[in-house]
Image (cartoon, rainbow over all chains, first blue to last red; front, top):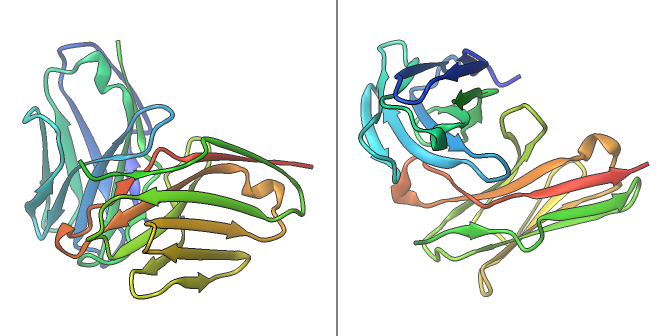
Length: 111
Length: 113
């Protein structure tokens, strides 16, 4: 166990809806990154948050947004869901930019 | 763009054999490399890392080799066990990327009893 927890574990949404995924980082960690992992592929970086500010973003459209809270937990929000958004969403936390520890992920299915 | 890739999508070995999983990277600015293990339904689990100023690092039953000349990374698992069956990813990071990791597509390792 890494100490990084994500909720919910599974989620089914309809195309066009909005979704919020949550991540509780490991105690003492101040950096959170989010990744999207399509079936059979490696995780793709979405963005990272450092001390409550977005600090780096991958090749994802603006409908992917996030927040980091004072306790360093984080949310990933996706608006106007598309079928291709179906994936495992992973959260990773670290202290500053050191080794990242991943959560178990949230399996999102868009129908 | 820059990416990290793996040579083989699947690898099947007998229990007790040594396994070697390979990875090619293209970003010469990368200065930190990590191997992750991902079991079905779980998030990636850190195995071992290596910095670009090293060419070899050993852990418990695992060794990572880095060849910067040909931009090649490998993970060696000694005395492979059924519990080693999983997908293995290499990932890279560079100094200005913060905690951002660039992953390859993964190699599925199957250990036959």
